[in-house]
Amino acid sequence: MEYGLAKARSGKTGFFSLMMWEVIPFNKPHRVKVIEISDRGCAVTIPARRRNLNHLGTMHACAMATAGEYVSGLNVIEAFDISKFRLIMSRLEVDYVRRPKGGCEAKSVWPEGVKERVEKDMEQEGVGIFTLESKVVDSVGEHVATTTTHWQVKSWEKVRAK
Image (cartoon, rainbow, N blue to C red; front, side):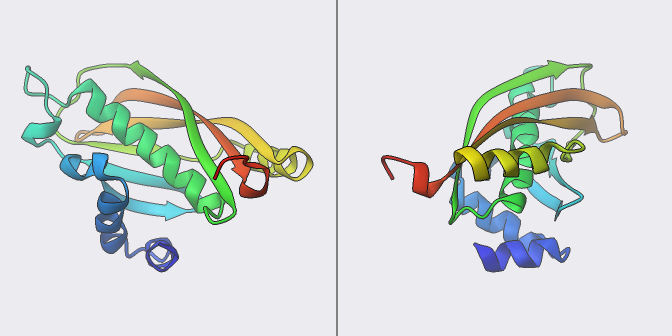
């Protein structure tokens, strides 16, 4: 995993995308592709393909939610070593703005000071609880949804059942 993550950080995201389809089988049929993973933020695309479309022929609401949660999770694994910390999504909220045209792109960045606060909380208490927002835009660049993902990052040393 670390080898693939290092290559993705350098801009070579193809192998990492394929690897993540195997690590998280739920995402494989959706063909979510990583386009950026860095400490500046992360971005993914989700194609307009039959599996991702609704009965109207546009991107399904759950496909947009998946892309938003996925990119948020990339920010978390980019920031916290999964061999040292357990990452848990505890809640997902989605605000839909408009019907999308074509495929979608989701982007997420760490808000100012949040990562530092989480790191401090983990040092002091062994657990960090926070939210990350992701913005989803369609193929013409229109804002179509915003996801808010609630996360818990906990030191494996503090986890009772591993």
